[in-house]
Amino acid sequence: MSTDLCLNSRHARDVPLRPTRQPALPREYSLMSSARVAIVDDDPGVLKALARLIAARSFRPEIYISAHDFLDSLSQAPPDCLVVDQEMPDMTGLELQHKLSRAGFKIPTIVITAHDGPELQQQCQSAGAVAYLLKPLDQGTLIAAIIWAIAMGSASEQARVWGRRQEL
Image 1 (tube, rainbow, N blue to C red):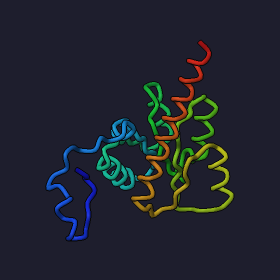
Image 2 (image 1 turned 45 degrees about the vertical axis):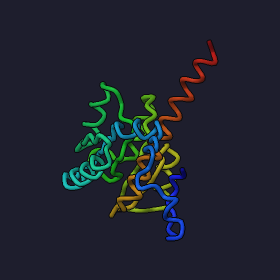
Image 3 (image 1 turned 90 degrees about the vertical axis):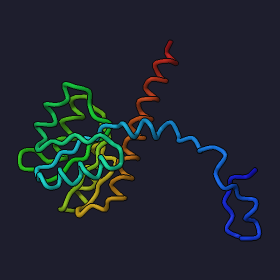
Image 4 (image 1 turned 90 degrees about the horizontal axis):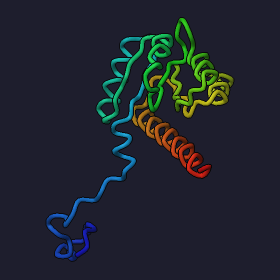
């Protein structure tokens, strides 16, 4: 029996009252739902709002009030994704990206900013940002960017592991 829904009333008898089985969620969904998303912003209100939004989507938010606080946390495992404000007093998002790159970290990064400029966007993307978003943020766009960033990071890790297997 087909589980496709049909809106034409003549075919209503072809539609089961309940699906015979629940569709399986892709494996990637379970990986993403436990993903750690670091948020770095000097505005406590923005941190709180973004943490709530990200947690509501089943990600695990980790908040940092400064780039230095975030860097200090890297002695543990790095997050699966980084959302960073560009304009912060001690270190900009771009400077943080450069510092992470020099230290050998490849964290998929989303730069958020209220101060747009084509040159800045190009610099952030050249430094490895997977997305550059303008404030005020559209929630759907941010979540889509986070999913994309986590998927890219996961694919990169899988390619690295696969490359090691090929060497054996």
